[in-house]
Length: 81
Image 1 (spheres, rainbow, N blue to C red):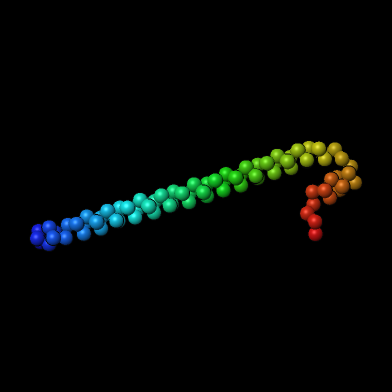
Image 2: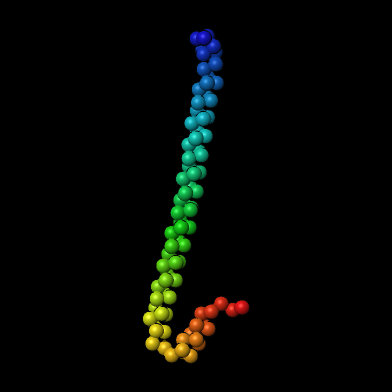
């Protein structure tokens, strides 16, 4: 058994190093993907927050309008069909 180990120890060490190197490379890819996803999530949350702020400001402004004035304001913000 010892003779086999002494004969093949370079291959065994190379295999262990390759496994550890591959694992570290995979982990760096996983971490990079998590960072990219976190950036997207933060950007989406900031967009939602900004849209909520705009909507709140518009709601405050139009709360005292008549129905016709409110319809005109709503037409400005409505999506075209």
